[in-house]
Image (cartoon, rainbow, N blue to C red; front, side, top):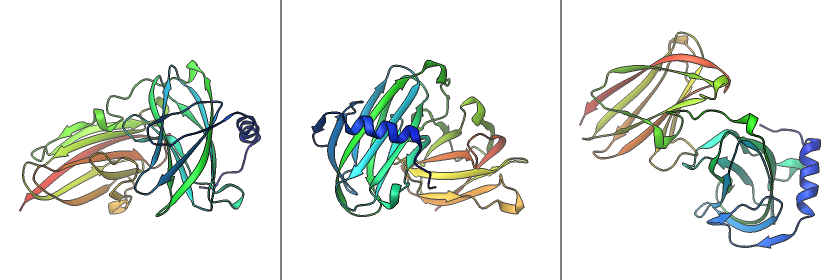
Length: 260
């Protein structure tokens, strides 16, 4: 979604570009608010900068490509999951390598700023950031809100009830299943009210789903289903989220498995 360049973003950009320039390779670097960092990124080696917050607050990030490569800017948690409203692909001013936005950091912890290419290619870039701690923005931890705290599923498990409530910071629920044998796995959601999206992720890859369902089955916006072939020992993560991040939805998750 394209968003207009705000006065706040312009002010932050001017401040950051006036700062000192620090050049380094991007991989494994620490984010330095108030300074300009240089780096490179590619589809095979994504640039990632670590940011450690001691409280909730607002992190503003700005990137400019040195060439015409299309860039995507993401702020993720320690697992690599993008934060709510934590992605920018606006192509500001018609420049596909120009991205900037402000994202809410929900609590103290370790976060990552990722500079990715859109599709194939390699790019060098300049990255700036600013940080304002604001403890009043803190959101309580969500017990099943990240891959590392995902609810474990078993193929013998028929169903379970759960809910999400974006207004309280419960934006989504994560589940994980490791197959003991190969076969066909089906996971589905059922909700009487509310619009859901069901996504499947490979182990360790939480930025883009490998499969996604927003089909509104049987004319119900909370009814979704994914069917996947799974190998013995393979681990797959599932994410149930509301179509609108502020929604509250009660739902039932069901699991089915047909062995090979």
